[in-house]
Image (cartoon, rainbow, N blue to C red; front, top):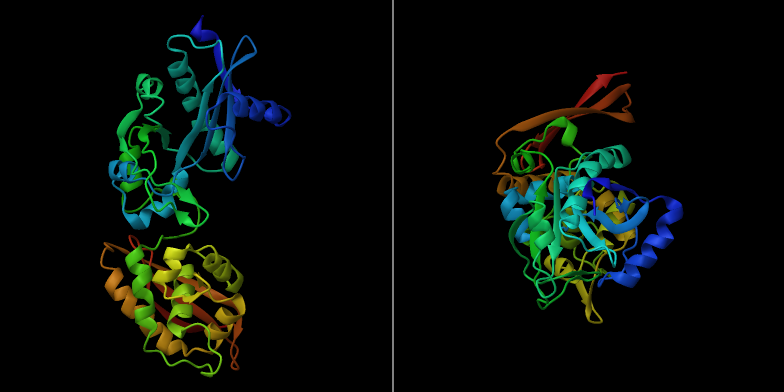
Length: 355
C-alpha cells in the first residue's frame, strides 16, 4: 500500500450518517454525538474510506495532562479550548497495514491545526487522547510521536459529577501542535491570538466551601418566616457564578442548577429528600436586590484578600454604565482592578462623567 496516496479530509454533512453507522458497528465504544466544538474526519485511499477520526472538547480534569502542562488551576478553565481530545480513531476492517495509523494521525494533525481555526475561530496547540490498557498499548500514538504522560485515576464524569469508585484507568497521550505548547499554556498571560473569550476561572472545592463563611456576618434583609435558603449560601452561589463568567440572574440560576451534589454541599445548600437543593432564580434575584451592597462589597474584598495572593500583575479597566444618569445629568463610570493570575476583581471605584 502506498501511504503517500492516503488523504485526510472533514466529513461532509451528507456523510455523517454513514460515519456514525460505521463507528457504531466497528468501534468498541460506539459512536459519539456531535456536541459543541467537534470535528469528524475520514482518511481515504483512492477515494475509499479507510479510517475515521473524531476530535472534540478536552477533558475538564486530567491530572497527568495538567501536571505535564504545568498550568495553574485558575488558568485551566479559560484555556481548555486550546486543547482538543482525539475521542475516536477507527481503522476500518481490512485496512490494517504497517505504519498506516501513524501516517493518518500525522496528516490529521496538520489538517486540524488549520481547520479548527477556520471553523471555530481559535487555534489549537495541544491534542490529548485516552487509551484503554486492557485493550491496547498505544502503539499507533507512540509511532506518531505522541507523549505518554501517565494514567488517569479511573474516575469518569457523569451528570451528577464524577463516579464514586475508580473504574479502568486510561493511558494519557499528548501531542503538541506547536513547539512551545507547554510554555504557552502555563504562562501567566496569554498572547492575544490565543485568548478564546471572556475572563473565567474555575472554583476549587476549598473556595466553594469558604465562600459562605465570608457572607455569614451580613444581615439578612428577608423576613425570617418561611426562609428556605441561608443568606450566606445564596450570596456564595451568586458570587461563585459571577467568578466563573456568568452574567445576569438567569445565567447565575442556570449555573447553580448545573452544580453537582458535592458542590452544592460545599456551598451549604439545604438538604431535602435525599438531595441538596439550590435556590431558584427568583430567590437569587430577591436577595441580590435587597442585600446591603456595602456589606456585600466588604465580604467580597475579604475573600479577595485571602485568595488573590497569586497575582503578580494587575490590569486596570474602565467601563461607562449605559443609561446610568443621576439627577444632575452625570453618567456613572466604573474603574476596576483585576488580577492577571487570579482573574479576581480586587476593587472597583465609581466616578461620574458629565453627559
